[in-house]
Image 1 (cartoon, rainbow, N blue to C red):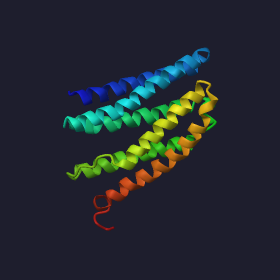
Image 2: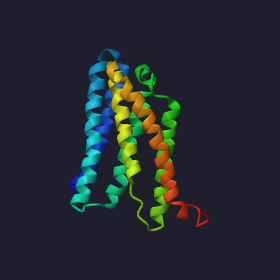
Image 3: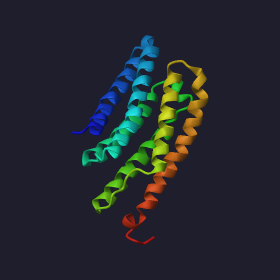
Length: 190
């Protein structure tokens, strides 16, 4: 276990704490604002750790099989789980829709499956730039939605903007992964 892998593991723990804060905020409405701000701060910490673990793994040449599996898994749990948890809040559903969450979750299943097929063939299939932009846009959106749940109307524009940018990048990046893997997926038929 190296430092980047420890950071990835810590991101999973922090993600659970984000969910706990959101659920307690929903159950104890009188504590909604402080718990939502707690979730927001923890979410930012988890999102930053995604950048940090990847940067350190590449810089120190510590890319491992664990990291190649756990890092995208932690990202997917952080984003999809946060979006699902936010669907409980009327404040978030002023912008967030269930079909958007379905599209995000479906894209993550698709990319995970494609990555598994390609890597099983012996070829590496790392995240690409489009996927990283998608992650940034999704983090922006989730963060803005959390501030709305905490009662800050100022960030509604950020949530709406992030929602549409995230949607486009989610679909385009998913299609791009399928396109890049087309020879393996379709046996050279394309």
